[in-house]
Length: 140
View 1: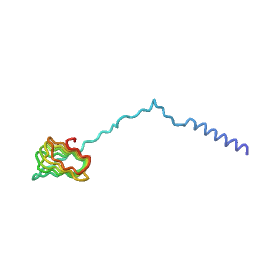
View 2: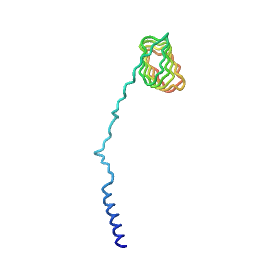
View 3: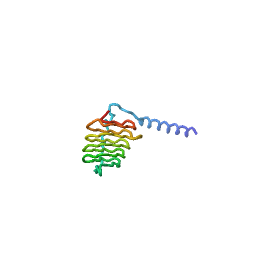
């Protein structure tokens, strides 16, 4: 039996000695942060929306929508969408979140409750009815 205890103790010793070289080390001189993420965002798919009878409806998420020319009423019921209007708008209504909307001039902007983090840029100071949160009109 003494021979068996000796072999067991020897085996445990060999295992401990071999594992001693397996400790994890962090050498701060060789590990450096990778910096800013290198991934780039893909451009949003483009879509043209017509102003029919004075009304344009933007109801597609995650697109770059263009409305060419003046349009009396623009209704945005989308999220994560860029809307570029190359004219003037009398009434802009927004129901959705995280949209970026640009127009030459907008007479009035209405943002519904629950519609948050939208940005509206116009060449003038429109009348605003904002029932959402964290919305910006002309970066205000």
